Every structure is written in C-alpha cells, then in structure tokens.
Length: 128
Image: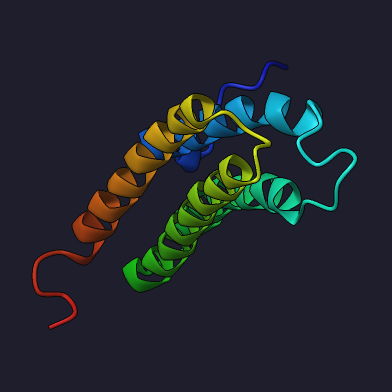
C-alpha cells in the first residue's frame, strides 16, 4: 500500500520548507565540514536542522494552541541556531559566504512562517 502523506504536519508549507533546508544541509555535512577539525558547528547544524522539522511535526500534533506554539517556538529557535552555525562556519573559513546566504534565505522564510503560524494560532491579544 502506498503512503499518501496523510499526516497533518506534512501539509504545512513551513514543514515542507524545513525538510527542503535539511536536503540543502545534507551535502554540506556529508561533504566534510567538520572533517579534520573539531568543529562542533557542523554537528550542531545537523542536529538543529533536524530539530526544526521534528518540533513542527510534534507541535502540530498537540491539542492546545499554547502547546503547539511552544513547539513552534522551539522550531524557530532551532532555525536561528542553524543561522548562527552557518555564520560560524563562514567565520572559520569552512563555508563560502554565498553558500551560507542560500541557507540563511531559507531560514529567514522558515522563521517568518513560524511566527505567522504562531500568531494565527494564538489570535489577537491571546497573551495580553
């Protein structure tokens, strides 16, 4: 039986973009950003990029809006961590600044989409 993409989180544009970012990061990590050096930024980039998608999926499965938003906020934090990791890799001459900008452009969109989704879930004035 073929899988039809029946999970709700798979319908979210931000989830699809987060997996596209993981697809973008994969060759960088596998290409040896951290090879030959103790470069935790490469490992952290791998972990944080995975955390974005995982937290979007987990949050989307929560029943209350506040629980959903908590996980979306974690996903947003992970996206910001990815941006910082890209900066570190550029600063340490392990990644070209132009390549990093490609990834950061995706991250800007992810962060923006997560903020809008959170705002939509909480509604106007939900937190006072």
